[in-house]
Length: 97
Image 1 (cartoon, helix red, strand yellow):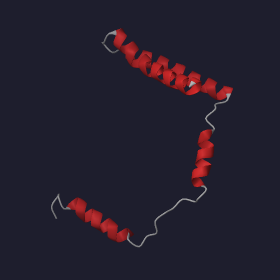
Image 2 (tube, helix red, strand yellow):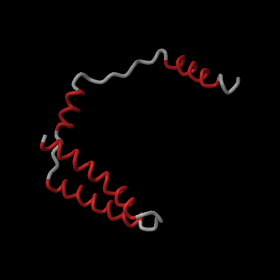
Image 3 (cartoon, helix red, strand yellow):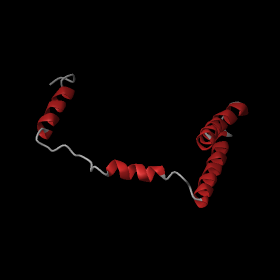
Image 4 (cartoon, rainbow, N blue to C red):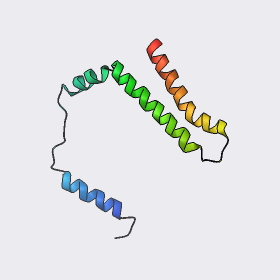
């Protein structure tokens, strides 16, 4: 068997092995339950505090890590602050329409 035939052989073997297996399905209420849990997008004040603390620690660690890189500080600031600005703009648009 050559290297070119190996993927086709494995594919054929797997098809034969699983041809009599039942296809898994989800219950009819699964999508409703997922939508209900996802729709609860509000964070509690404690949850917001945790996210803000995480972001502050991540920002501090990014700055500390990037300080030893020998590139211009403006590029470092852009690399760190651009994702923060994009996230803030996206959240503001979502919240205020």
